[in-house]
Length: 124
Image 1: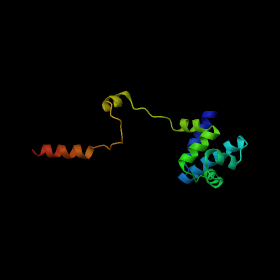
Image 2 (image 1 turned 135 degrees about the vertical axis):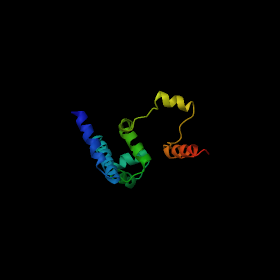
Image 3 (image 1 turned 90 degrees about the vertical axis):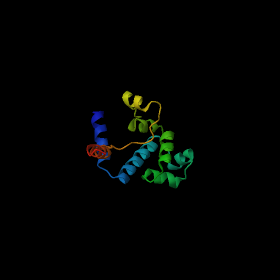
């Protein structure tokens, strides 16, 4: 049953625009705060925000760093870790990198390969 609810929540986010997702996350943070019987001012004071900034966080209008601080204070930071798990490269990819830390993704170079083959065919 829990797995079905998780899938429904994922589908819910997929069907929402970015502002709606931010607002939903704000509502979930609000629910965490209310479950701990804390006021907006108490949470804002604890994480170093004004009450107005915290109120904006609950409506989905916050900096990500502030969302992290509030989740940490409310004990919900692990949910973020579960939502965005660390990704590890495959062992083959790690061997290819051989100690070099990957800085960015690269695009496929099919056009360049096709172009160099056509030049080779012409005897260049």
